[in-house]
Length: 74
Image 1: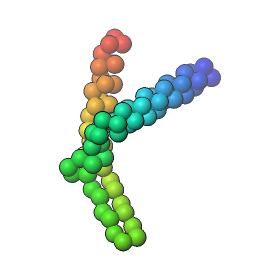
Image 2: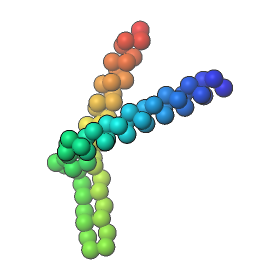
Image 3: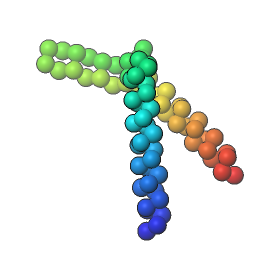
Image 4: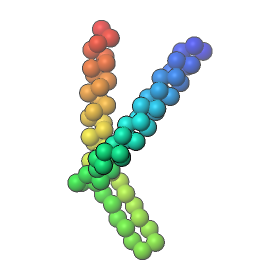
């Protein structure tokens, strides 16, 4: 059970950090979610948005951070 508790604390802290980054990015007017290549459709009664480029950028950054973290743990 202690491993589950540590895992939950880690994911909670990770969510906190992501939430703080989203707040900082919105205050700095960085276009996360509105990058060129992000798909959005707005109709009369419907809107759809899929930030594919933002997802790719976030995935690359997280992969880099996890790779660095893994290298430092060795």
